[in-house]
Image (tube, rainbow, N blue to C red; front, side):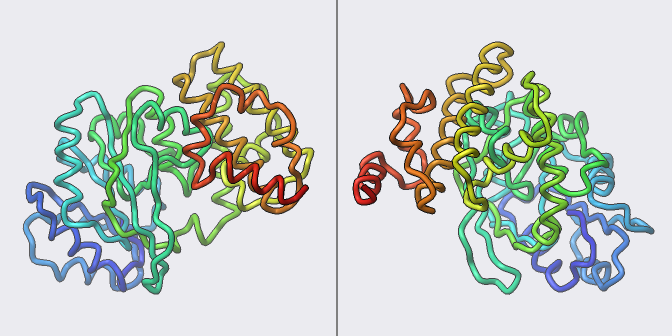
Length: 331
């Protein structure tokens, strides 16, 4: 648990770990030079399983997390942010999964999200199976970092890179997925509090995510420029953008290029990668449809939807019947 100026919520996070049904653990708290009462809050807990390490100066998230990796003494290492709450059976369920799946290097889960004032919002649900996760990594964030538990040796092997001042977890899990299978449990493991740095500094978060995406595209063997990178970033969160007809045409051709590159280089598992690419295109096209920007993607033959009827079943609550109904109603 990395801590920096979290005094108002830190106690609740610590208590949630101490209430775990799985009892054989050490809670390693690293205070990253806090200037508030965070250290005092941690000191109030009288439990032999807690080890507190204080850094004299604020080193930032990547270096603090790597410090934790170097100090960890357990076979497995679980992450919990200092403003989140772990549900009681979280460690029990993840330890059981890693014990039963020795080939998997790390496992996360789902998160119930709340605002800073405690109000609930939509949950964070992630893909489950390792092959599906690996295939989706270029298109979506596949893990909620404070739900993750990994094999300590594997996490040390990759670590957090200093240049990713935020979103360093997206980069690390992406790199780790090249070598090791990663999974998620289809269970809610934590309560996740919104308002972290990636939410507060959206521009910096976008830049960091684009860096990670650039590395993924490079590994895939695709030539790309800054405009391609910007548009690919839009594909990851289409509901946050307004797509022009040019964007829609680019999206289809770009995703087909990725599928072809993967056919040649075999970087990601198939058919999962092609399905993930097709799902991205559908999401973009549906955003445009709902915004009444264009119905053309559904009226023209598309290589991304031929032979992939199963993709539709996984795109939110949408069905082909619903799409055609909307099209007919709009003439």
